[in-house]
Image 1 (cartoon, helix red, strand yellow):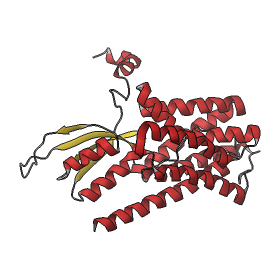
Image 2 (cartoon, helix red, strand yellow):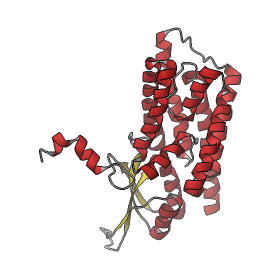
Image 3 (cartoon, one colour):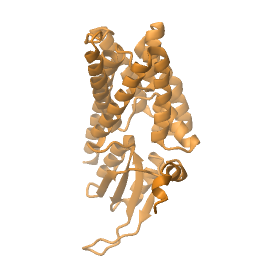
Image 4 (cartoon, helix red, strand yellow):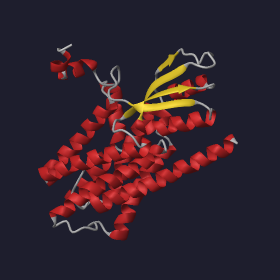
Length: 306
């Protein structure tokens, strides 16, 4: 029974990766690249290189991803496994597939201002949908996400902040290449895309991580999975069942969005009767996350009132 469940989930994960990669490739080739919109990521750099030097979109993305993945495996180990490599390769293939099929000039007349807006909005929605599906599988499409994780780990800042910084640099590069208006469009695309990614993953919220509470008969196995496979930590809270009065320890942890599906799948397979709560997280303070001192400094007018 467990083997059948494993195979079913594995097949679903790879289906998400394939479909998500082709949707994202469609977004890049048909909407953002023709409009000279580079909303961060390796695809944003590839868009700049395409318009400056005529370099192949998909090949540029693949060549940039190779060294990034090697660094990721070296620093983070097995979490940058086969599925992530597959997502990266498929996105490059999908980008060129749509280019060869429909052309690299897009499907809209970009001489009309309204169509640039449509490219911006539909580019954000479709890219977010595609990336969300890939992340729902516990994978990613490589690229600057790896740089962001390195910055978060060694720069002692949150993953959300590091993603913002890395993508911000690319958007700034696009401002010098395409002009300030296109950079402003890129910011809109990035914002819409992030909202869509989160909607696809959990159909809720707009943040980079969620607080997860779990109680289960397999609490030690789940604890080991979070520590060793997800490389995350948390707390174990002593609790009792309200009806049974039996001891029921609760795991409390904060998990990035792209790992939520992987954790949920593991918990479901190892203990289908486990009780699991996933809730929105507004701020996470502490080592490797947001700085409480910075938050207090930025909100001193509010905090001084109390």
